[in-house]
Length: 153
Ligand SMILES: CCCCCCCCCCCC(=O)SCCNC(=O)CCNC(=O)[C@H](O)C(C)(C)COP(=O)(O)OP(=O)(O)OC[C@H]1O[C@@H](n2cnc3c(N)ncnc32)[C@H](O)[C@@H]1OP(=O)(O)O
Image (cartoon, rainbow, N blue to C red):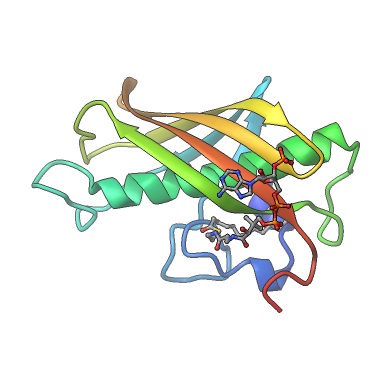
């Protein structure tokens, strides 16, 4: 199953968090799951903050790209866009807020769930919950803004 990131054109596919063409990045993929969105990621040992626990900056970057991916999915749905490699909304992060509720253990899969809080013509607000072994460890809110095809070129 394709994630929204699989539809990003090549020049948007180098992001460290979600770019499929960045061999050094996280290459996350974000999907619809019911009315919400979902991203999965398995941290490596070197993603350590203190031994046994995940570095918070990594968790923020996962929430960041989960947010922009969820925003692109939400805009496509709201605007009736059938996703293809030549037709997908492109969003960047305007604002990222993260709250670390509990230390996040290394050693299993992280699941990030997104709830679309607001969808405008260009701005989307996504609330994110990050779980490790089923325990809610981090919450966040991402404001994403739709940008044109030639953004950054
Ligand atoms: C398929 C391919 C995908 C491709 C995606 C692949 C890349 C994934 C990106 C991963 C995440 C990143 O790291 S992205 C990299 C980090 N982010 C950036 O570098 C973005 C830098 N900032 C910018 O370029 C700009 O400030 C923008 C594009 C974010 C917004 O500028 P703009 O386009 O002029 O927007 P503007 O008209 O002023 O505002 C539009 C709406 O957004 C709101 N807004 C604007 N800025 C903010 C803000 N900081 N915090 C809250 N809200 C804001 C405004 O109030 C307004 O709301 P309303 O009046 O409509 O309610």
